[in-house]
Image 1 (cartoon, rainbow, N blue to C red):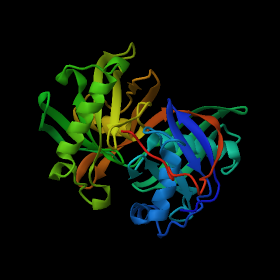
Image 2: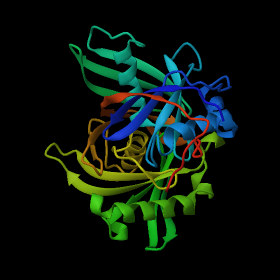
Image 3: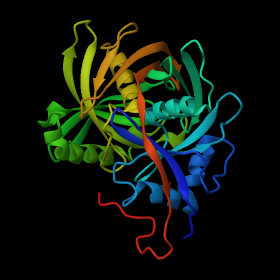
Image 4: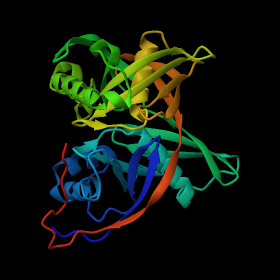
Length: 339
């Protein structure tokens, strides 16, 4: 395999990495980002580039990133193909936040003198809007407005090694199963990290090929993307719900941030149960102590379901630039993963 040098710009959002490839050195065919994702899944050249940048020794089992693509039309600034250690995902909120920061910092999107710059990105699940807040030259926060999100199924029983558990299933650009960590004798803490991964994988694979994992209108979005294990921490001093989560996605990959699209899925569940109402904000913490805030910006109907448009607020920070290559004599080639 011959891959020329590949330049990336790396960020983290709430502790979760995001590796941006502004100019992928491979052709990704398709008229829309959704079509390009399907092409990437089946094309060895595109997939090998993903492996090169995500796998060890250049990446790791929890690496995440995206290839910049043209937008679907002139209504967006650019498109992106999200990737992780096992393939190409339909959505990524933390990545979208990082991309918005990158777009403003690089001048790809001109900074609005008002202090709020809108960045519009086409992703495989649709078009998302981000508002980058600035004070002087400093970025102070990013609002991620996602696609309509909704609960697909409630109180689904799943048999696991820890006994039967009950989960809700909701869509937030990707489909997630939601499991209260205490129901399997766990808490979302670093000390229980390995146990949380194990049960998260069990739930995902038990549901992934069932009707519960089917998207109602676009089968390209079907499949359980991840399991959200959460702790309910009650309410804060303002009466807003406060939760902590660890999202286990792909096959055992862990989001270090509170998970952007996962938070949107969580908002959909809480809205459906009446635990989050317009005007309230979900305080959503990660396993490493980072935080997003999320709220409902619109209530509507989508795909026949009562849905909400969620907004998640966080920010991202640049961690460096890289220029990767592969030595033709390197027996490891595009690398390896150990999980």
